[in-house]
Image (cartoon, rainbow, N blue to C red; front, side, top):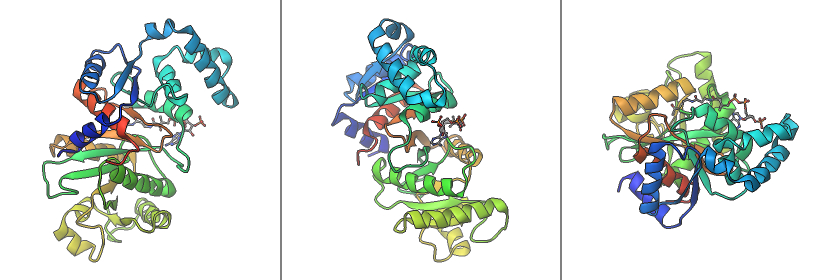
Length: 313
Ligand code: ACO
């Protein structure tokens, strides 16, 4: 069964309330109809007019937002204004338990969706960093886990340092396990060098991140630094990274920065013919971003993934 079908089946087993702050946008409206009809979640569509008519909740959310952000300089007036924006209203619904998760980004840019999520929902206990996993289903079933590969971080952190990169690696392995049902994540820390074939400060960062990740998760199968082909192709791995527990059979790929990660997933999608969608990891509650080029079906899939995040497949 395809990953998305497994996710949809899981979503049906426990209906979650997912708020859609872009509720007056045609693809979102169509997606909400499908989500409801297929019993994947209870969609909550927000629009400026519906919020304007709900003064009691706006007041409650404004007060809570002010308390949350006053130390950062937010005034009561500014908080009242912010919650008139469906994105902030939706985030406060999730924060206060009036919704279980949020999906947005068909209209808003990634930064405009991420910033309120980081400021309001914040990181989950024990997590230092929010990042993302891109779930890539490739036509070549010989790669990764029967064609499934998890890429990170392609969405959030522009230039993670070694410690942040290590945290991204461990969080992505967790997402591979919990959301994708991959029993044995095998994590490759990607670089333009394999096991010392090149020397550069950029490579040093990946080596250091590999060491830190080992100390954070000693039982995790993780290796670096590895080039893309050494990570995925057994013949190349046999030449360049003999004895590696990951090389040639990686199913989780950690890119050294956002430029390479974002470009890498788009190459896999556009030239490699992979189908894909992203989830955010490390947030205290599930909130997910869409691409502005998304279809109604992409929104449905992201709603289903949001509904099951944190639940093992
Ligand atoms: N994890 C946890 N918290 C974070 C993170 C993170 N990765 N990044 C920022 N924060 C927190 C900060 O600590 C701060 O919290 P505070 O206000 O409570 O102190 C808050 O978020 C805002 O931080 P800023 O530094 O002011 O926010 P910034 O302007 O740097 O924006 C953002 C953060 C939006 C994530 C930025 O790094 C960004 O734009 N990333 C790239 C997004 C993007 O364009 N992705 C590519 C396209 S997506 C695609 O193609 C699918």
